[in-house]
Amino acid sequence: MLEDLLAKDLALVVCGSAAGQRSAELKQYYAGPGNKFWRTLARTRLTPRQLSPSEWRLLLDFSIGLTDLVKGQSGADDEIDFGRAGATELERKIERLHPGVLCFNGKRAASEYLGRQVEFGVQSEIIADTRIFVAPSTSGAANGAWDPARWDELAELVRELPAGRAARARAAAAQTSAV
Image (cartoon, rainbow, N blue to C red; front, top):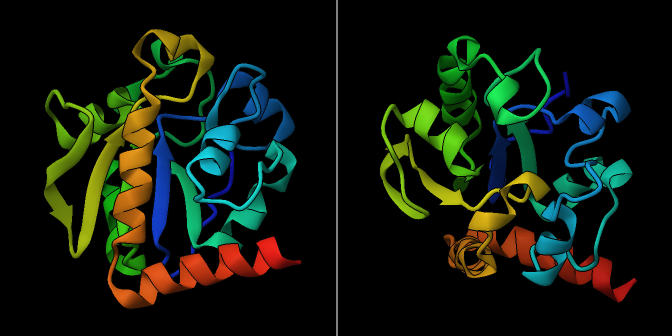
């Protein structure tokens, strides 16, 4: 199980289904060799450079948090018991912490949370004042559904957040780039 990386008023929280096997072994988010998460954050300029999985805690510096829908399990989506998903716990976290956007990294976690089939992009539901976005999974196992343009849409949504959240995210990224 990976510990949450969360704080109040983040611009973005990314929620996966559960830790992959390699991530669970290393206790680092998105550590699988084929996972595109870290390079996607850098490519979309949500982070100023490509972080490594071992640097996952630095995401708070860029107003980004991490969690998973299913805690206490690891593996691919077809190995996870979604009957033990923590939808209520996730909702409570989001209500308490008020991020600007909750992004599900893949349709499966979003579908399990929302209780319906989903499409990529902004969803009609919100949690308190938090927008919900579904992005294609960055897992190497999901390469067939990969569409980097959807992650570009997410980055634009984050940059368009109300002044406080977006400004904190931009300032953190700019400050780190200047160092």
